Amino acid sequence: MAVIVGSGDFRYELVENWAQIPDGWVFTQVGAVAVDENDDVYVFNRSEHPIIVFNRDGEFQRSLGEGHFPSAHGMCFGNDGTLWLADSGDHTVKNFTRFGEHIRTLGVVDEPHENEPFNRPTDVTVASNGDLYISDGYGNNRVHVFSPDGEYKWSWGQTEREGGVWDGDFNLPHNIWIHKDLVYVADRENHRVQVFDLDARHVETWTDFIQPTDVYIDSNDVAYVAELRNRISIADLHGNVKARWGRFPTDEPGMFFAPHGIWSDSHGDLYVGEVLEGQRLQKFKRL
Image 1 (cartoon, rainbow, N blue to C red):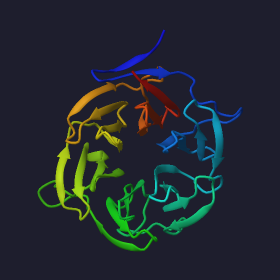
Image 2 (tube, one colour; image 1 turned 120 degrees about the vertical axis):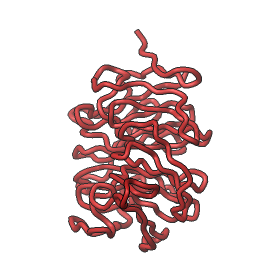
Image 3 (cartoon, one colour; image 1 turned 90 degrees about the vertical axis):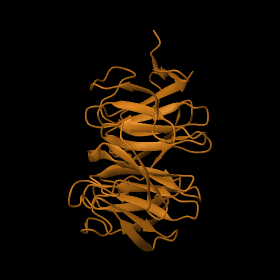
C-alpha cells in the first residue's frame, strides 16, 4: 500500500527503496542532502563514502570526499557549481568540485577557535555576489562572512544578552540559507528561524518550529524546514506553515527519526536525510 503524507497542495507519496546504494555501503548519519540543476542528488553522510551521488531515479552515479570528512554536517552549491561542505568534526569548511577535486579549505583542520572561524561549523550558503555565509553553530553561535575567494570579512551573533534572548542572538545556529538576498538561520535551540538581510539586520522571526535543523527554499518561494523533533514543515516566506507531518521518533516509512537535511528537486519531489537512530534518506514524490 502506498504511503501518502502531507496535506493540501503539498501531498507526497513515499518512494520506497529509492536509493540504489552499492552493496556493502550504508548511509551513516545523513547530515545534508542537495539537488543540482540536473536533479542529481548529493547525500552528505558520515560513512567512509561522505558524498554519494544518485540520479533522480535513485541510480548510483559516484562517490567523493573519501578521507576528508570526519563529521559531515552541511552542504550547498556555489555560484560556480562547486560544492561547499561544512564539517563539524574537524572545524573546517571545504570546497570540492562535483567530481571530487579538492579546491580549498577554510579554517585549519582540528584547530577550533573561540568566537572566530571556526568551532564546529554547521552549514554554508552563498549570496548572489559570491560571498559565503557560514553558521558556526556548536562552538561559537555565530555567523561568519567570507569573500568569494575565501577571505574572512566579518561576523555577527551571540548567545544571549541581559534580559533574555533577542534578535540576532543564537543558540546553536544549525543551518543557513540565502534566498532573494535574505539570510535564513535555523536557530535550533531557540526553536526558531531568524531572517536577516545580507548586512545582518534582523527582518523577522519564525517561531512555530521545534529544533529546526535545516531550511531550504525553492525557486517557487516554498520553504522546507527539517526539525530534529522528528517532523518536517512546509511554509511560505513568512514562516506560515502550509503542511507538516511527523512528530514522534520512528523508523516507520514516511515518518522520521531526527530529520537533519532537506531539499527538493525541479519536479517538487522532496528528499529528507535523518541522523541519530534514523540514518537514512527518504524520497517523497509530489502528487
